Length: 252
Image 1 (spheres, rainbow, N blue to C red):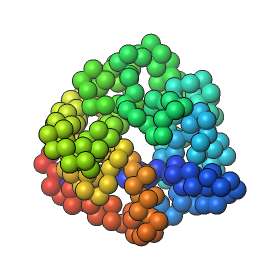
Image 2: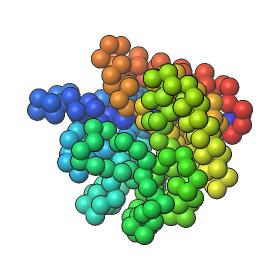
Image 3: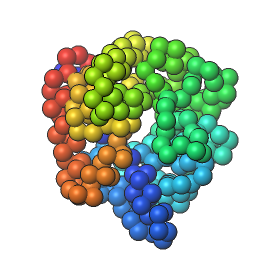
């Protein structure tokens, strides 16, 4: 049997709604607690340099108030490293970040930034924080993650999900093969594999068939569907989709 598949719920866009008007409603920490009560295995939050959604006090409250692992998404900057070391989340996922992007546009260039990333990964590891790198499923990036001694990678699934949504079948097939090959390579290098970005019920069910993928991190889709269905129902439907896929997983 393949190992169980965890669901991390990203609450960034609850904060986006709050910040559109200011004030404190809706509260992303309340959303995190409701997500956990509804079946989430952990909470992901991205503290961006411009604080466009999650804010510093959100991270402090999440660390103090939730009873499941907190995954802090962060850019590789001295400011974010200091916040991570002080806060001590369960995990920190290093992501690329541009002020002009609406959402994370691609994977981290770990292969091209080994010298820059090395002290960040080392400091987080030394602080007892589990490091993951948000990368494309490319051999050079996966090899770089192993070289950097990051125990976890999170594969950026955005290009695959976009191709599926736009019904570009050839592109979707090519991206899926790249993901499958990347997952196998990472497993052989001893890395734990997570995946995220753009996943919905159907794509989450498909990627759950890859037994070496241990965690999915999903935010925008769940928050968007929660407008219509409510967050508990949306998380329940996502867990059902993941379970259907996992039941078809061929190997760990």
